[in-house]
Image (cartoon, rainbow over all chains, first blue to last red; front, side, top):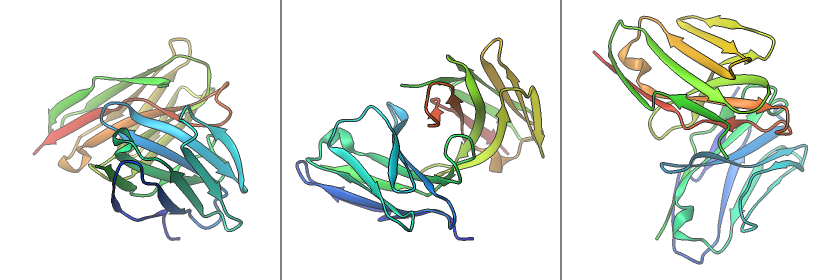
Amino acid sequence: KAGVTQTPRYLIKTRGQQVTLSCSPISGHRSVSWYQQTPGQGLQFLFEYFSETQRNKGNFPGRFSGRQFSNSRSEMNVSTLELGDSALYLCASSLQGGNSPLHFGNGTRLTVT
Amino acid sequence: SQQGEEDPQALSIQEGENATMNCSYKTSINNLQWYRQNSGRGLVHLILIRSNEREKHSGRLRVTLDTSKKSSSLLITASRAADTASYFCATDGYNQGGKLIFGQGTELSVKP
């Protein structure tokens, strides 16, 4: 089976712009989670989608949003970008979520200038 | 918020030595998982231990769980240079609604 695919791999944006990141999970996986990783804060949970419904949400402002499509592919969007949004954004898929192992993509490295 | 905290933050050893990393967490859990991350890449799942298990093995990996102390340890035996990576524990807590919360990680360096 193909692994989790995240696109794009690198992205450079300017403050105030918006960005959309894409994630294709492993075939058959219905849960997709998103994490933000920074040197200072580590891995922070953003949200989890299961069968097109947001099942869990982390403590991020409303500028961060996501969705999941019927084929389980997921997108996350960040609007009005700030310098502090610069991070590695990781997507992970699993069969059921927290009860089962997460399979991570290699992430999207977002730089906000 | 972080549920797990790893100790030490960084560890440097010689090839062939054993590496032990510890993880402490705050609330009751359903399971605890360990992951490895090579620089700039995604995390790779290593092992999952459930709250009713005390020890689990996978190849050169041994994980223990002490729910009374709210702690876990990951032992890598006979380490190799290829084991150089960051290691994270992650908890699925009772009150976390199924989401996995990661600790800050231990950076392991294995010198040839």
